[in-house]
Image (tube, rainbow, N blue to C red; front, side, top):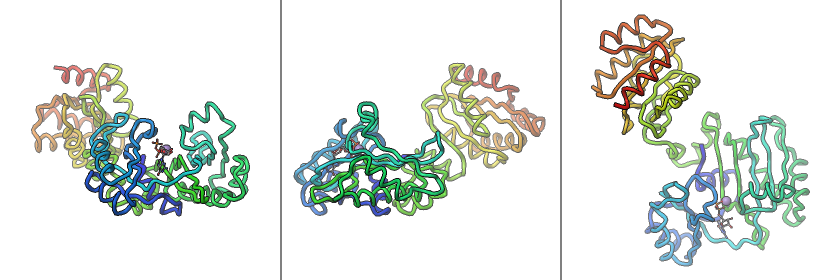
Length: 381
Ligand code: GDP
Ligand code: MN
């Protein structure tokens, strides 16, 4: 899960990192109020969208009065930035920054451990720095168990030629950033830029945080974020599925897909795609689903608008085909659907499952190939 800037900011703040005073809003009137009452009349208005490069794209504006904050907010809210709708703005006090730096901790999937990165080239795209002046990017790789050792932080900052006066400040910042990475089960925590004021104060002026949703540390993240915020990046149906303990993802096509097991579901999507069918979404009922869970899965997947068909592909291992068949029948009884339906059912209790389906006028395909052909044909009529 990728957090928005203002959410990541809350985690950084909780980890003891200084962030500029600010507040988040969805309305121009409130932007006016925040600017006049909380920020002394001036503000940086920042579009909260899950993409980088907002500054260059016009998503970050400095305003000099509460009136201007209201006008700028009015024009930003509801508009699109790099394909993402702006529904929230973060307003922060404009800080006088002397220099900008870059720092991050991320999970390197290659070595399966963290990397801590630091650069004196902050506020610009780090990929650009890496391409043009790679010598300005410094990295250390802490041992995942031993953690980030003091000598590693010192090495990082010596390499970057950080001056003595601010060394201690940076040391503390990197230490806290690493702790945040560990405590929140993050795969990335990035501050770009870190702002250094003339007075030697360090501030996180931006945040980019990615959390491993399956990490136990999600509990910690939920504690820090406002109620329900960790689910903001999910659609209505994705939330409903998560509540039912089901894995559900929305796509853009027209064929609904239900399967059991991540591998089978992925294969189903690939086969549909190869044959020219476009999946609208997919739901993994997991192993051992019973009739009730199957019925729930049916309900969620078919609730999506614009479906032309539904493909259910089940391989019965610990999942019993008769339970799946009962679930499908139950779902159809509850919600009479004109939606073209193709079921492919094979494995444990296949005979009983097929019998239940046949009795209800549904023929089950034998193979994935056959099923995919059938649903594409039926759904394109
Ligand atoms: P990004 O373009 O999406 O990475 O958004 P950032 O939050 O990093 O903002 C882009 C640039 O705007 C930063 O590199 C800063 O130079 C500037 N900026 C952002 N927030 C502040 C702030 O609070 N004060 C000042 N002075 N500049 C800021
Ligand atoms: Mn940035």
